[in-house]
Amino acid sequence: MSDSPRKTVLTAAQPTGILTIGNYLGAIKHWAKLVDEYECLFPLVDMHAITVPYVPAELRQRTRSLVAQYIACGLDPEKCNLFIQSHVTGHAELAWVLGCLTPLGELQRMTQFKDKTAKGSPINSGLFFYPVLMAADILLYNADLVPVGEDQKQHLELARNVAERFNSNYSETFKIPEPKIAATAARVLSLQDPAKKMSKSDENQGATILLNDSPDVIDKKISRAVTDSGSEVKAGSDKPGVTNLLSIMCGFSGRSIEELQSEFFGVGYGDFKKRVAEVVIEGLRPIREKFESVNDDKAYLDGVLKEGEEVAQKKAYKILSKVHRKVGFVERFR
Ligand code: AMP
Ligand code: TRP
Image (cartoon, rainbow, N blue to C red; front, side, top):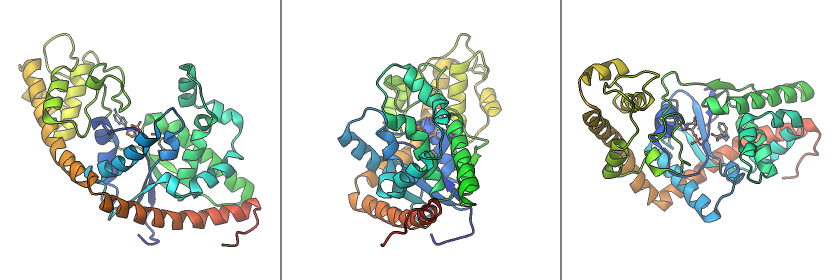
């Protein structure tokens, strides 16, 4: 991956557990389509993951496992850069400089921080600073495009603001990153409470389908999914449970809601759910198989991460040197 005129895409997820079909259908499946057209960087943001209580050994294991999950979902390391955030020291270094350009008030306005604070558990200042680290992730590689979901838009706006502020204080340095929203991305909802999104950190295991769930487990989870009153298989705001199952089926089959509605006209919820489960099981089969084989191959994963680190480090160093010069640091001797 040499210097190319292709635009750069960067996005990330935290290594906080096995990915759900929500992560896959709403994000990673779409990231995988970008690798031919763009220079793609997908850091595994382990430094973000320590902003909330966690278990060190689990973090290490989850970070490695996330690389294997990415590869299983189609992020081909020959075509994109998979690396660990903490391996490239520039993320923390740039975050410090950007933090010194970020007014306190801007961080206090972040709704995700406010939501987490409102829950009442103790908060560390890393969580408060989190959006600045995210801005550093993006700006360290001068990313043009950042695929993000709705919940990360405010953080991206902060990254854009801080880039603009740096450029106007110290002269043009950073590109202003744009959000990239996949028009076809599904928002997958909890199987147990379709008022909220399916999340890998949900304590209710019945609410999520994980990429490595076995066929039996998938079948059970879908058969127990909350459905709505009435008996028609039809999408609509009065039928969030059924709509969610239809949209999951669309995501895996590539068929439209309309097509599926006519296929299931007159079919009861029970039989409908059986079909949804079959489609999900078939859709996840190659992913689960690839995950299991890659996850066991430590040498291969190490190789991917080492190569990823080297490439990212080189790119990061170029920008960081420029930043250090502009802010008035004395040039390093090595
Ligand atoms: P997270 O699991 O919150 O770290 O999110 C990683 C990526 O997956 C982000 O781009 C999210 O927008 C996306 N994502 C997470 N959960 C869902 C969901 N239930 N439906 C659609 N996209 C999701
Ligand atoms: N904050 C993002 C999330 O929790 C993860 C993230 C970290 C990220 N750095 C990023 C996303 C840079 C996009 C770009 O989902």
